Length: 437
Image (cartoon, rainbow, N blue to C red; front, side, top):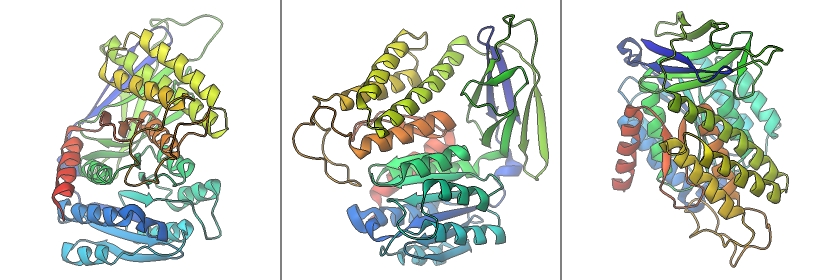
């Protein structure tokens, strides 16, 4: 069962909240997860591949017996390491055999994983990589994104994990946003088991796939997209998903009583059937909860502007956007709500890191290179870690999946867009990782 509620915030803003309930018919189905693992030479640095292998071993231990795992490794070429394998006794040695060597040919990995997915359809794909693509006939962000899109046309979730600071942020960010999936910058080794645990628990508790909301002609998505159908992605039991719709301006301002729009939620159910829900506007959502979601969306827009300004070599502009938007959040009616408090912390730390007189933050993360010594010169280029965290947080706030983490290395404050069962899996996998040799 999927509970869908909608309410007007004001005359121009309409909120939709989706909360799926557990569906045993779906959650007991055997699932298939594909891993696309970078094993290029740079993955040997900072024990990145060792951390990936430990995490995969924990996943194999934690998965239901009927779940299948496919692993494709890619370096200068690609290799099918495990092909829809269920047996842990077979999977563990295969994971152990992974070694880091050579360049980075992501194209070869995508094509090999596509062949495996066509033989046995996958329920989720996880890409783990630490660097830019260095070889293959397709190496640009645009080309690789297109290759992913055409290789997996069923819109299965493609979760992306960047290990270290040198990965292609634009590529991993765009792939996750395209499929409404999780993207995480793994700045410390302990982030990997938390993310993979979140993904596994999400697959286990799916109640629907390829979900989307049909947008009435008189409305547009508040996130700024012009599509007539908003892509939600997978529906996970007990995990909230919010969509805000904005009335299209007309010569005569609309009111909440002028016209009640028809909202339709569509998704694929457990047996492959297409399910449609017509959503009544009941106006029983709390105004403060809608205000939180409004601020979440406005934050993603501000973060994207900041990211573009930094990438474009305009740190002064990025700093101004940060300060202005933090003032906006402080004045919001939702300023004391937990998610908004977390978002404000991100902007406060961004301001501190963009400040030309601020020293670099703390010790170097285990997955990244050490920062330069001394104080930053006036508006010197921000460290790559800042951009990686900014990209990761923007995706989490946009797709409502994964983690909004501290901008400073070593910070512990996070907000998780996860269900209760996903949060339990995060803790369990992280604890097991800490205890494993």
